[in-house]
Length: 320
Image (tube, rainbow, N blue to C red; front, side, top):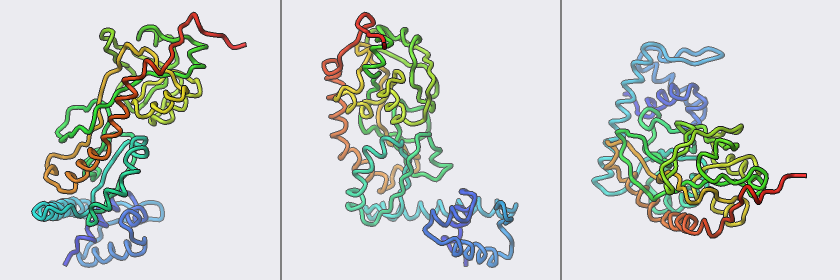
């Protein structure tokens, strides 16, 4: 009789491209994973994987069998979730994707408390700034920042998030402070290269859209923030990433009267998972614990003009 664990090993091997990666993901040795796949092939009387010294691939039969195995595993997971929902106890495995900086700053400190509250639940959290395909890549849920694109996913807002425009005092002393969004075209901007465009949008003093350019791009907000502190240009980042730098004067907010477009911190998940006790438990816990982060961000935004001195072009000093 086929075992679900063997099906999972096969699917993970094909998804990750190697037995070693699949074994590591499932907490097995490579030798054990290989024996389980061999046993599965023996039980079926057919070869599922082609192995060479350089690569591993599925046979045509293996591809068809793996696709059916995915449906079996999904049904088994759904049955487990339904039973857990009936019992009201979150259990099983919860696989989460989250942005790198937000994950390390806000999720990492609260995971221990979440696991202690729900001892029957295992959590796997992957930090990646790209927008993952939840269903295609096997995630239960994801944390996403900013404005959400239209999709069939269910979204639950954790709290509002503001984007602030900042530069170091040294950069502003040398290059001058922009007086309006259009002035950004004359400046070096530090660009988040996973954004859908390099257009920065503003409100407050009136609607404005500016396509910015710069010599440094990154898919990580902390790299861009540190580059701004080093005087390499103007950056647009969530308040939680620049709050400390603003407080200690390492960064100065610019164009404070022109509010950048707003977004939020959201948890998203597939519609068919919205009844999952594990997902509900995680979302509720994150909202409960990150309320202080929302209040802190509101204070930063409220006091930003008072705490951030402006530097005008006429006040700048040129380097010797």
